[in-house]
Length: 71
Image (cartoon, rainbow, N blue to C red):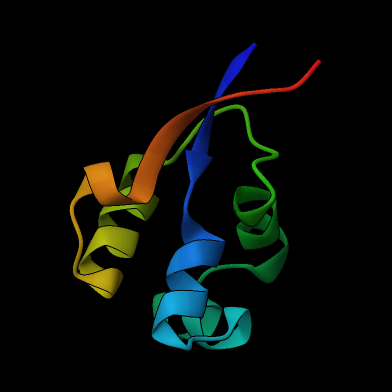
């Protein structure tokens, strides 16, 4: 089964940014943000994707990937 992975954790680590800082900078609720970090979401908010791309100065293709879930 395939799923969409948002590379938030990878981007945070590569840029030395904490979850607390990004949530504060982007005015995001920490609980919701953690769900995105754990790939525990059903829908992806387009505005969040734009905010993340702007924040990390990256393209959408650098932020998202389709993965195969081990069953």
